[in-house]
Amino acid sequence: MKRQLDPRRPGSAPPAPDSAGWADIFASHDEIISPLAKLTAAETAVLLQVRRGLTNREIAKALGESESAVKRRLSACLRKLGVPTRTRLIALPH
Image 1 (cartoon, one colour):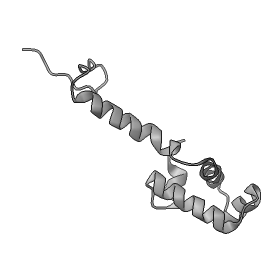
Image 2 (image 1 turned 30 degrees about the vertical axis):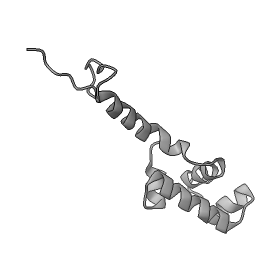
Image 3 (image 1 turned 90 degrees about the horizontal axis):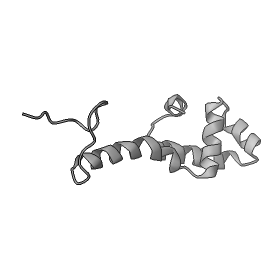
């Protein structure tokens, strides 16, 4: 009897193109790649400054924006990346 291979396990054979395994692989790939791709250039700039440890006021000065614009962009980053706090945002993998 031939053993069924799990397409998500290392060393396993890839699933047939028409099998449900491909959907699982692509879904997990999108979860890894797409969150940062969802950010605008301005949101990415704020995220990079947050990761450097700057405060909202310091970020606003560095980017030449208002502090309220930085807060809006930071909120958008948190929402789009699905993290509840600034600390968790900093802890995300690069």
